[in-house]
Image (tube, helix red, strand yellow):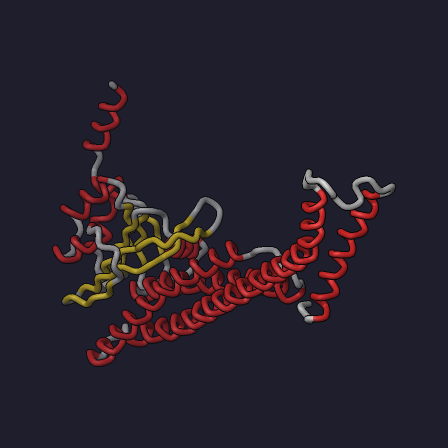
Amino acid sequence: MTSHHAANADTADATPEAGLVWVYHFEPDGTAKPLAGDALGAALESHTGWTWVHLSLADTRCRLWLAHHAPISELAREALTGSDEHMRFDVVGHEIVGVVPDLQQELSQTGEVLVRVRFVMTERLLISARRTPAHSVDRNRRAIEAGKRFPTAVSFLDAIVDQFADAVAHMAERLGAELDGIEDFVLMHDEPADHRPRLGRVRSQAVRVHRHLQQLRGMFHRIEQRLVMEKTPLAQPIGALAQKLDAIDHEFGTVQERARLLLDEMAAKMTEITNRRLFTLSILTACLLPPTLVTGFFGMNTKDMPFQNTDGGTWCALAVAFAAGALSYWALRRMRAF
């Protein structure tokens, strides 16, 4: 109990800047320098370059910094801390406020769960926030550490969305390769294994990402038209991203359609296999029914039963049963039942 109260006291006493995930200041040539939280104020007051602040909304200290220290409008604060998961991209005065999708970043690989990255951008400041680690943001942070330059906040935001586009493009390639394997197996085997659960997972994932891509590309196309009318420098990178998203969305639409067609083909093949087995069972039933009637007749405990007192009567009854089955088989062949 004492340690719990001590932890709460440490959190309460810590400055809000101590909870920031990453802070980088970029010079006009695009070179970046990581900053400690206590140096953020001086960086924001600088008249050269721009600053990137990345927040974790799960940390109370980050929310405190947003509420009391972030140099942004009240509308931007609401967008960063709100619970609305709908994608948005709005230009409000000198600020650009947005909510864009990203893939969750797992420990050693990119996840498949879609998350949200919220951001507010001005000419000299970009604040991004997320509740769970995001793949595109983490990749760009690694690119900064490797020496990549981002001369403007717009170029960095463009890189984040571009990384997301690349990640979902790789996902489309992986889903397509999985469909190729299933398709080859279905075409090469008359009685393929039931891959419908795998196809269902592929189609479900493709539909989910396709839906988000449609919303994102529609949003970018709308904002592109507005930026072109306003003749802002953002129009060109936003238009390029919109075209890239169009191509990736087409790939996911193709994957979705292929998965649907394969599901239909797999269902048709499974139905054909079931019908074939039912047909074989029906023929066997038709051939065995007359012998069954014969054995049932000779199983009655009544007087004057044929072959009851005849030597080899059992074999005679068996011959009658066999003849009844052969007659049924001949009749079915005569009627071209199979």
